[in-house]
Amino acid sequence: MSGCPYHQTREEFKPFDLTNPFPFYKQAREEEPVFFSEELGYYVVTRYEDIKAVFSNWKTYTSENAQSPFKPIAPKAKALMEAHGMIGLSGLSGRIPPDHTRIRRIVSMAFNVSRFKKLEPRIRELAINMIGQFQADGHAEMVRQLAYDLPAFVIFMLLGVPNEDVQQVKSWAESRLLMTWGDLTEDEQLVHAENMIKYWNYCQNLVKLRHENPTDDLPGDLVRLQAEGHEISDREIAAMCYSQLFAGHETTTSLIGNGIRELLLKRESWEAICANPALIPNAIEEVLRYSPSIVSWRRRALEDSIVGGVHIPAGSNLLLVMGSANRDEAQFEQGETFDIERTNAKEHLSFGYGIHFCLGSPLAKLESKIVLEELTRLIPNLRIKPDQAFKFAPNTSFRAPVAVEVEWT
View 1 (cartoon, helix red, strand yellow):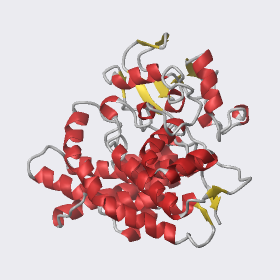
View 2 (tube, one colour):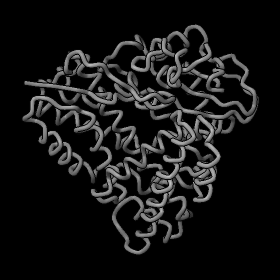
View 3 (cartoon, one colour):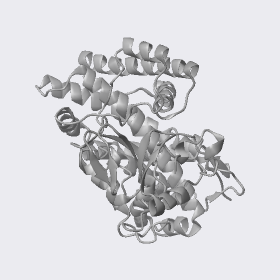
């Protein structure tokens, strides 16, 4: 196997359908669970046990390439980004100890469940208001009218970004996604590099404003902790904002879109959560397992090693396909079956594992829970609009439907 379904921008990859790459994953797990992709230049790892082992061993497999562009940055775009101090910029996912340990410990003091719980009434009010805007229409497009904006408003509440800036910041975040995980021409890279610089300058200004006027939000808390003597720089605080403004809404948008789509396509599952909302939290875990927002992540081997019986030379890049691991029958019985009452659904690897386990996972699941609770309460007879073809943006790591058309009577 020489290709990966998430890099199929060329004719030879058409057999690997972006709308459903999971048969390819299953074939890889069974026939060649660790293989080298000439197209990507990565060792592709597909089994649960192997991926969990790599995530667990941060000393051998560094995360420093986690957010490096797949395609080399064109010289003009790279020079522009270097001039603005953006090369090597990372929040937490691309850092390693001791910096990772130091920064994560400080950020955890502010970015925690108690702060998320304080937001819960506002998230629910937001969800109810957004659903109310289309509830009488009898039809809606769930990504555009609900899943796209709600997580953005939530993470921006957390970070103290005013509502009038939401659309602009989201457009900058999309440039970051395309620049890192897309397949852009040199001219396209330059345009998106300019957007990313605006995005980075915005995050630096957020921190500057907190020094001038303390606020009750994440950057405000981090500036306060810094003033109390905790070792975190303004650049590191800005980098956390830069990271969270992207990760905190793009992946949650994907989770909500994937969740609504999967639950409505499996009608009995939708009816089950309508009848018993207590099933919703585990249903979300099953969506994360079966149809994750992030299907693959990256590591680099710092020394010669063995993964799944395959020799990995020092310096090699690895693509860890969690979308495959999450359906591995060695870990999940009948892994290709969607089951919202699966007892070990939360053992999925969609939020990573080990020291880089996603800090914002409780917030993502809380938002999804509220959305499903309110949708099943307000529009229980929601159904997928017949005969629609679902589209997914081509890239190596993120998987979410571009649109989910629904209707009801």
